[in-house]
Length: 534
Image 1: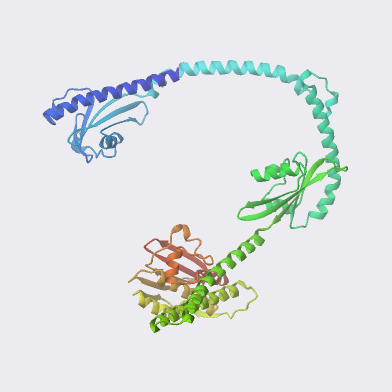
Image 2: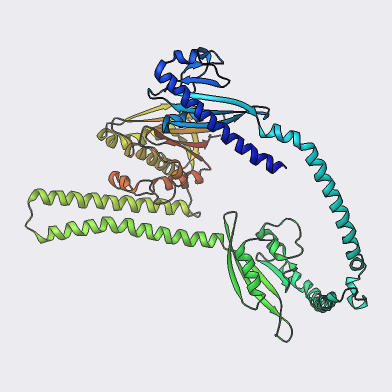
């Protein structure tokens, strides 16, 4: 009944829209002939509105056009402006009424809209709701009663069966005989396996309880027989596990690994959880005759740190090789050309300058690598002293002043003499690298503001520039070694790609915090937050 009403109502809406279209066509003809005065004499039960192309209401036969809001955002108006005609349906707040609109673009660009209000489908269905609900509930109650009666008659003999002692049950349904025999066979097998596993469980607990590696023992049905605390910790399990091991990790790779090992194959799997990487080694366990797989032993190793170290080593080696190869290739090329002789003196001077620049770049790269290596080496002893950050910032600004003058970038230092306990060489390198980037990636005639602020417990070094900015997607990666946001631009301004990595490691050494705020083409602000000197 409800479906029929919906279908009929849809046909009614389509018919009403057609009627509004016909009436709009008649009215548009009158307007084209007599102008807007035609609307003043119009006698119709429909609501008629004339709207300018900018959305301003020029006429409405049911409201004061002057007080009406702009209609440029109405769906039917936008469609009419684009394609010549449009329509839409809007429901009232109570959902009992709906208004159908049809809009037609006139030759002068104005929009003629004709509308009519009628009962919504919800109002119609409301009248049909009560008999429909009564019929539905009656049908459901009768169906439930009949289904309950039939189900109880069928299940009554099955519920009385003793599944723990299947051989003692009388066969109620002949169709169940194969199933009962199979269940009996499986139960006997499981009992034997569980008895054997229980005898060895204590041995496993003694061996594995204090190991950092995780151990899981499962039977052929994937049920967990034994585990050690490390396994639960590595998998992030709080409560003691029970049932199938597949509940511990629902990934497809883990499931396939368990199924393969229970088929007799030794499997290895790399799992990732919460930014950590685990290696899972699964070995099948056989019966005494080594003929049948009765379960599996799973070893879980945390390989996060070793993988990170290996990835870092490979990436660092590749980046260093690339960064060293580029200037060395340039130096070799220029030197080879100079060896050939016969060059003008000006060309030789240009080549010599290029060789000098590339050599300087190599020296900077080597120095940055040495600085990073010393920061990575936890055994290095540093000279800690009280530092005046205002004084250090002033010294480092003087070191980048020449580069700033070449780009006509102004550098301003303000604030107070905040004091911290730190390593002078490291803190100076941190501030220099940020200021150097602020100048390199600044715009012509830009500015760099360095401000030292002191709070009750911290000293802040805030370095703000008016440069090219950093895309939001790259802001979390700028402290990675050799990472450059725009490699082409970075090559033009120079640099080793290690400056901000030194800043990051220096901050870690001082237990300082780094905050980056940046917008493209607006500039970047980097804030270092040191603990105040006691």
